[in-house]
Image 1 (cartoon, rainbow, N blue to C red):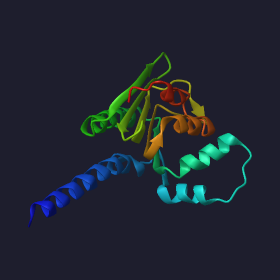
Image 2: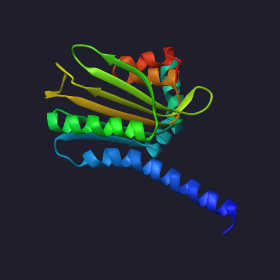
Image 3: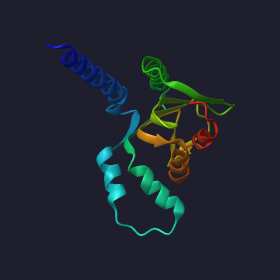
Image 4: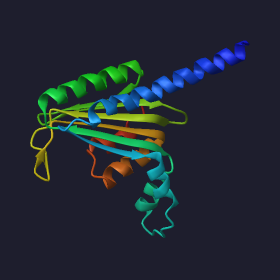
Length: 183
């Protein structure tokens, strides 16, 4: 094999391993009865983007534009303290192994929120990982949550991510990321 072929095979292997690790982090917990798992695939976001909806609302239009750039959105939630601890440990290990940049940490009496990102180009990011732990007094449809892990991948503009956060009622700290500028 020539040098170019070897390099191509190595690069392809690295890309497959890094993609598989994000998926395996979520796959590990997705079939657990004590974990709620939500996965929205690239195909679904492309379907959103292809909708021929005439929208007068600029925020809705921006959401449709963002949908074109997202390749996946994964969410895990649990109220089980043991599983929550394991998710937290695995998320920190994942962020470290992928060398994700810590964007922001918010700690208060009700929760701890961690944001990590994999940088891309032009102030865009490839992955945004958000971990919310030690949630207190969070109740959704009668269920309490201890931990939430969220991963959004694609060619992401943080300003548009803050719009997505407001439209999907995600934690308000997500909307603060575009003001940081240290990624």
